[in-house]
Every structure is written in structure tokens, then in C-alpha cells.
Length: 302
Image 1 (cartoon, rainbow, N blue to C red):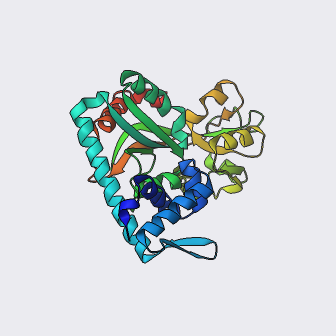
Image 2 (cartoon, rainbow, N blue to C red):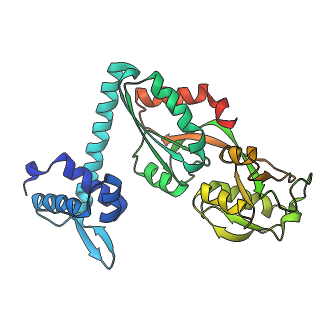
Image 3 (cartoon, helix red, strand yellow):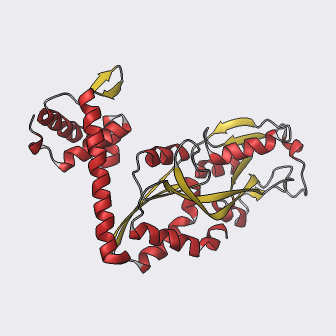
């Protein structure tokens, strides 16, 4: 074993494969070709002197050596992050880096605030990941970002969460829907209506299902879609109703491509949260962006 030949680049690639559980997904995330990634892992394994992964069927698993190396890589990553934070603190908020991960529903508002933040702090390098709840929870569990913006904080993780804005959920339909224009519609009128739902585990879906179940209505699931844009287009095409964050449909409502149904109990009120692991030391850049969000939170719900 001669780890002196191992490079930081190889360790970063190895950690990505371990986290994704897939060479292909890790290559995609790192913007590398699969052969290049596989070669780097092979060379690292040769430096270690033991195999790092084993394949059973179509899945890959860490070997004992791989598990030990992954823990060491996570420790190195954590130490490097703390070093970066300490150096950033010495430079103030005019230098440094910021990594945030946001829910797809927030991409209609938070990026605009991020643009203002970047203009005010041009020396900060920013990376933003946009994904569904499951992908954000995976990244949160492995501490890949500085801040996470989502609706419902995970109950199974020890995190800090701070509410910074309301998230109003509205019920939308195509303009020609028979209920369009009616006032004070009872929830029970929707008993036989087909719904376009987000993927299982979505906070929006869970909130809608809970609300309707409380009124004796089991939602008829016509389609499950993981994309807000796809849901909006499907509703506009007349395939069903949907519960969506009002921030995601403002343009369609203004253009009358969709209509908001006046159902009793709506809008449903949820909240946007800034989330990060408990005990995490936020960098000066992350703290500055969090403060920026709270100072301008009113623009998130406009």
C-alpha cells in the first residue's frame, strides 16, 4: 500500500461513487466520462492495495477497505470545509464559496434573491443544486452543501431549521373546468376529480393528501410526476387538478392558462425553511446569504 500516490481528485471521485452507489451516476454528477472515472478508482484501489468496491448483481457495495477509506475521506472533506470557513472568516464575506440546495418549487423565487446577493458579493463563488425532496435529503445526510431550502424539515435527522417565508398551496384547474368560477366549493365536491400528484414523499403531496383525508376525500391519482412544469402542462391539458405552490403558477394564472379553484380551506399554508445539520459551522458566506434571505423574505411569497 502506498497512499502517497493517491490524489485528492481520486479521493473526491471515490467519495462520489460511494455516495451515489453507482459509477454512472457519480460520473454524471462530476461531469466525467465513465471510463475516466473507472480508471481513477482503479488507480486508487491499486494505491490502497485492496479492492474498494464489490459488485453483486447490478449493485456495487463498499468493501471493508472501501468503508474505512470513505470514513477517512469524509473526515478530510470535513476538515477542508472547516479550513475554508476559517479562511473565509479572515477575509470577511467578500471572498469565499457558497453551496445551496433548493427544492424545485423554490426555484421560481430564491434564484432571484440569489442574483441580488451575488451582485452585492461578487467575490463569493456560488453553486446551486435544484432537486426534489428525496435528492435534497440525500445531500443533507452527506453534508454536501452549506444550506438547504425546503418545506418540511426531516424528522429523522438532527438539523437546525428556520422558517423564513410562508408557502401557500393552491388548487389549480384548466380554465374550462366545470368548477372554475364557482365560489366556496366544498372539498367533498372533488371526490370524483382526477388529480395530478407529485412523487411519493413530496411535502406538497403529503399536505394535500392530509387535508383531503380530513374531509373524507381520497385523492384519485391519475398521474404522478416529479416535475412542477410537467404537472402544470398536464393540468392545462385537462387531465386533472393539482395542488401547487402559488409561487410556481403565478405566470399561468396571470395568462389564464390555469385557474385557481375557490375550495373551502384553501390556500393551504406551509412554510419554507432554511435547513442545515445541527453542529455545522456556517461559513461567513452562508451566514450572509441566510441573513439576506430573511431580510428579503417578503419577496418570496409575492
